[in-house]
View 1 (spheres, rainbow, N blue to C red):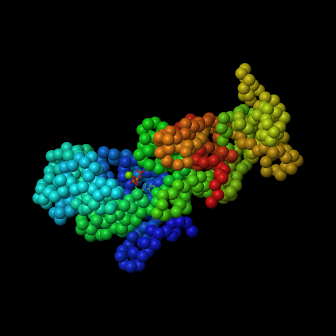
View 2: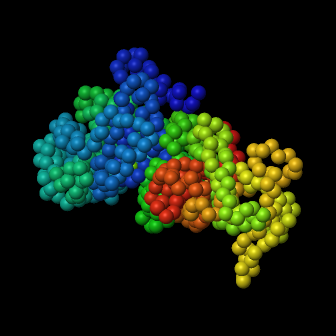
Length: 551
Ligand code: ATP
Ligand code: MG
């Protein structure tokens, strides 16, 4: 049973349906379109969509676009694509900005009820007047303006008569509330900026904490699931729904954020990595964005299974990145064809193999999934092996190729290293080997045993390929910014990307962007959709084969 088969949020939903509080379940995923989605968002997506789905309810995709300066249509489009790719269909596509008229009306209602006022204090003064956890706040000298004055000033704010920051609209609640969020929070601010959706229609924008409950109520959301840092906002959330006289009453429920080791899960920081050139865009395969993970080769199934395995609780949790890797290996194990790729090639000439002869060897496409059938691998007098699979002066227990030693070529024959060819600088540039025709793979040869098996690619048909191998982008385990004045940028791994050239089997020529393979001994790879050209395939390593992680 995964952690979402039963969790505390689901329990609440069951009770609400049983008691008749709600007839159906409506949830929403409410990203702010100010960046690309990351693996943390996947948790919220999976939670919202799968919980509603469990009860035949529905889920809206809602853009929380109340902050025009940071938001952009590029982000709207990428978020839509990512949610779909993860495998979810939203009921309605909503924009908070579509409700600006409605929100304005509700703010006017609050003014009319004596529950909101226009304040002339500056942002700094408002902060100062707010008090602290131990001291009550102070009332603004503008707090007791008449309803008429407030209505007029608010309209003039809307009409653009004031500069940014000159005035705000505040809820009138309680300046000495033990909950600081209830000390007359700002609900509207002036921002003379163009909005990606409403253009220049508005120069005042609702604050997130005022807008969000209204959005939920307008859409008839029954359970508004958000992360734990909003717990202290819940009283204000309920205040807004009640005093704005919303017909439907959503319930805010908080859960703990998902963090991963060696991973940044904050849009602000991810944006910094992009803008300061640490990575090659939001979809760089090292990024924990959904688009980066897609390009790296993670599958939607693996991400969903991973998320479902993480606990739904009231506490933020940091999960080992290896757990995610475990799920992608599990998913690809039966799906990904096996093949051989030679990284950093070294030419081998098999001197006793007939010149001009090409032999087609048979191999299973995936021994763990025989239904995938068989493939043909050409073999001839010239092949490539990996430089790392040869040593001129090997240490003890080196079982790969060295002068005089014999190894098995996967799917083919035993070869023995007879001679080394070096260039003028003394670098090994070619090996001359002999093969034993009796040792052909699959013939049941039992004559001799060898300890090493290496992979190879036939040289005349080999397809050039680039291999991109990744290390974690962030070296430290945690996201803690505060140790010794360091920022997360100090923890960026300078060696997070290694690029190697090599060759793959000829049948790989037909592979398409985002096709996934398991390269013998190297792990799972994805055909990079951006860098692959007609001349050269580019492979991103998704994950290596081995992991210490046990689930
Ligand atoms: P960030 O700090 O990365 O910008 P955010 O919470 O500000 O994250 P939103 O666009 O507001 O980003 O997020 C949309 C939804 O995704 C919210 O409901 C938010 O709580 C949820 N979410 C964001 N990050 C995580 C995370 N690490 N774990 C679980 N849920 C998350
Ligand atoms: Mg945010």
